[in-house]
Length: 278
Image 1: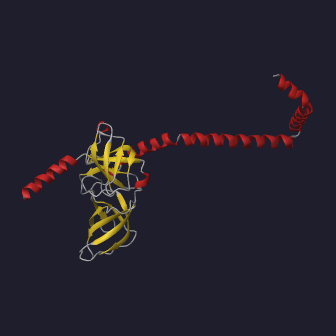
Image 2: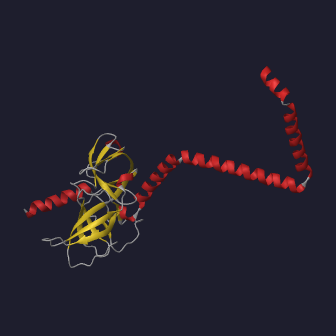
Image 3: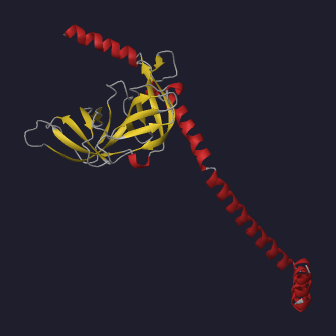
């Protein structure tokens, strides 16, 4: 404390000068309309910038909770989409009526582990049996198809990524509804391959490919990707189509697990039909 007093006494001329400058500035502001207005505007601008900076900092740290809220809202929205309902009368075009039954529901989940560089890639989600997730459920994002649930525990689930050799997705071309199969040949996590499109069809780079809905795993019309190249390989009777996948598998965070309410009923019916044919 004594050193502080000594410092002030040693430099009291400087501190007195600063004090007088402050007093003079205050007198000018109080007694001059122009200067007072300039000072108030400058103060408001400075305060506004400070508050804006504080808001941006708070917003940055709140991004996780905001993102979580958006995921929940998107889940609710998907559950209300017309594609989540089964039409029972083709003459009715609104799904808010008794002639539609809900067919698909969605469970939001977060990706806690993911791979894209293996031949067979897996994704781990933070939802499991306790949250309603079961094997063979589809997994999608707002961009497109992600994969199919393979195994579940009470609170976690393992997903066969679209980037897996065992995954084959029933798909179709949007412009003509031609059916094919989408699979991954193991070269690039941004690419996939579509097979079984007949050669008499006209294809164009940029044509969209969506789910057919025939597998009972994914709803119809979920985006998969767009055509980037195509050819008829020697000895083949169909196109081999290269697809730019819509989903960026290297940056997955939030996904939706798709539950087909009628899956067991449909599988049982089709299994019985196949057994009768045999």
